[in-house]
Image 1 (cartoon, rainbow, N blue to C red):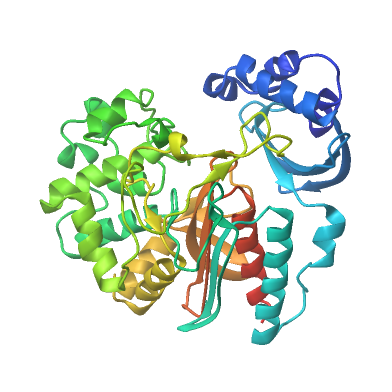
Image 2 (image 1 turned 180 degrees about the vertical axis):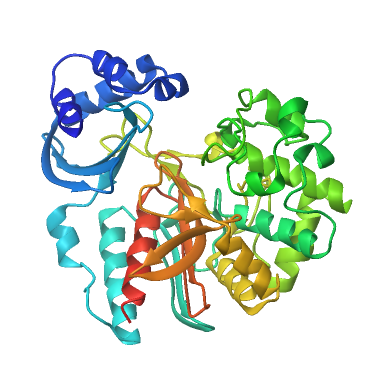
Length: 453
């Protein structure tokens, strides 16, 4: 299938026939063939096609193809997912910018054990190289327990005015606040105000799909197993007011517990449920159960139109120019009105470090509650790397060491951020970026590096 895709990328005609014959019906329903063909055709025009440099199978249904453009000296990583339900069909394709392999090799992290001084030196070298190439803009924090080894920033918070990012700059963090929502839910569970096995219908009576609400549990919502349709919160241009808004922007729910399907809508409904169970607004609950006990003073759910000191603007490449042949664009018009229980808040590397330390130390939840959040996990299907999803936590291994955390943003969003913390709290890595998608890749690489310590 990857060979057919590369052949199409090097063909002179439109990609529409290839897309219609090669993609699953679910994928075509999600994004019409004509729109995807428009993006592919423009990419072919800009790049002049591609030469494959490396093929990297990632499990049974995913392959990564590293390729060089025939024009413009660009490199791409094509990530292809095949379907288990429609064998031989493509479920999705991601087109991600990649570094020049020679430059990447020059600052490759070692695969042997390193010292703290090595970590600082190697990370700074990588950040300097990426910033010089224009592929990293953001802030990073690396800590061993409470001791911070690296706390630095590169790039610009505002490119028009050439205002540099700082270590305390506030970045849009997309889906990372799903962890905060999960903490709120679990705190209310600890207090006996709700149960993970409560039905959605008990708390959200206004949801206009009563038959679905009578089957969906809060646990299924936390794990993205509720059968809710996909939803892009960036479509919202006004404050999110109710679960009715969610219903109008999602398809008819399918049967719950039929597998993992990432859903922003599910977390918005969780926000509605915790408000009903507590009598407080979602923002008040996060302040009470997350921000205040963790000591997080630089985070908030500010509207995109608000004037906020030291807030970074995000910059993205459009979907039909993911490799940056043309200019970048501000993502302000693509963001939702304000953050909510599914994400969209702003935060700093210091605050997210404080969050992970508070979670590890028992200041947010009892240790047995956090263990429950980790142990109740399912396969994160469709993820770019093998991982699982617990109760609001993304679970991965770094150099064989289990970690918890979350990511936010991705390609064509102007947001790329991730957090990783070991289950025993010994290491925390936070990388927040206002470009895509290199900051999250930096977080992955650093996580691997420190766990070879």
